[in-house]
Image (cartoon, rainbow, N blue to C red):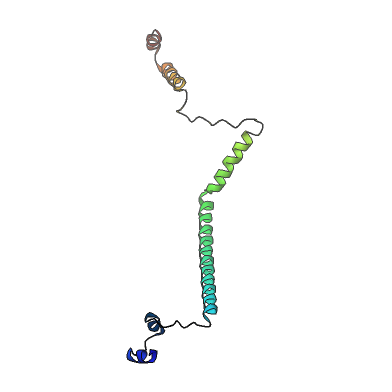
Amino acid sequence: MNFVMKQALGGATKDMGKMLGGEEEKDPDADRKEEERQEALRQQEEERKAKYAKMESERESVRQGIRDKYGIKKKEEKEAEAQAAMEQASEGSLTRPKKAIPAGCGNEEEEEESIVDTVMKFLPGPLQDMFNKK
């Protein structure tokens, strides 16, 4: 019956027999072919990774050339230097180092007084007396 159907369909593939409920023919080399396919995929993946690693190393060399030309440090180097400075500062301390308060934060009254004092120095004598009487 398979022969008649294949002839009628013009030499249909093996899949046609499977679709009609026929038995599936097992390929004796299927396991070997699957292993070869998997090996080919692994090899392609390794080649792809090697290609991108090479491209990245070329990019990094260009980046390093730019850093050297303009005196720019890498982020990792900056972070390492900052960390080393923090460790060196807290070397003899038993507690963790206090964070520095940036300018403009903290005691604003002291800053205002210092600004007023600075302005008062540049005022003529009678104006200084007038402001000091308050």
